[in-house]
Length: 348
Ligand code: NAD
Ligand code: UD1
Image (cartoon, rainbow, N blue to C red; front, side):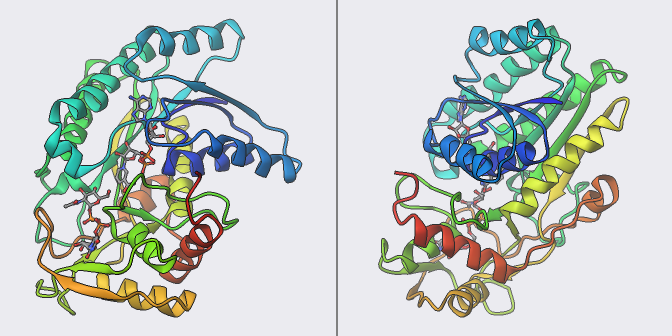
């Protein structure tokens, strides 16, 4: 089965690409490399080569807003007699802070780029798509665990583009309910790395998320961690989140593709998280215990837009996809540290 992975060279896309290739899928990665490195493609290839796996991978550099370049991939695949049967749509911009500064850029890349992709899919009779949505769309919420039927109320332009795309996908489904197979996966906090230590998260500049920040403190690229508030209404006063191992998350995509394949038509939004909440202090403690690295920290004020506690109700993913996370917080810390230690400067 041939799949197109937009943004397939990114953090989540690269791990998912490798898994799909290991399981015999024919993969086309389409990525502008605006937030990723071509080196990850070579890592994927050499990993598969060293395992003696015969694989089918094409990588094409391009922007999802470039209609002719994207269209050519669909047409060429049809000409080869190996049409693209489904798309996993990772491509997009994901920084909350940048989206506040440059909202039009986010609406252009995320929303217009997705509209472009959907038009081309429709024209080329490819009707299956798995979309990378985000738990950020739930906004301020007091009700945990968060289930998919909770009202969405995004608090920043990034989150608003994700809601707009989900609405676009839903409208498209309703326009022909016998045709489209659509699954929006609402990720919570993807963290950790491939167990080989060869692939992981490689943020540009200073990380804004907790986990890559901690691994960079551990490798001493950054002096200390700033903990954003110790006076939240949580058990130990620090913010609580749902951290999901990148390998568990990647496996969720394989199950989502299988789920779509088994349906005649479908539209679903599904949470992917660990279903557990861990506080910042718990993460620091577990990281120190699992890796032996000390993480010096300082308590700072709360970060704008933060919430006290966020974790997923994952019963829908378990029920519909037959998916459940298998890896512990300890495994997240060990794998994340292994990647950072082996690649102190990431892919560069
Ligand atoms: P990432 O930045 O590592 O990967 C995104 C990839 O898309 C990158 O390789 C980038 O080069 C590519 N890209 C960006 N704009 C493009 C364009 N116009 N055309 C073609 N390619 C383009 O991010 P990620 O963490 O792997 O996230 C993947 C998806 O999941 C994103 O849509 C993101 O919004 C969503 N998501 C991520 C998280 C997270 O915490 N990592 C959480 C929720 C949702
Ligand atoms: C953040 C984004 C969210 C996005 C998600 C994944 C904000 C307000 N929210 O979510 O929209 O979907 O990343 O990309 O930016 N923390 C520290 N010190 C740090 C970094 C984080 O104490 O240096 C704390 C935070 O206050 C939070 C927890 O660690 O309690 C996790 O933070 P983070 O990794 O940024 O994820 P989210 O807050 O869930």
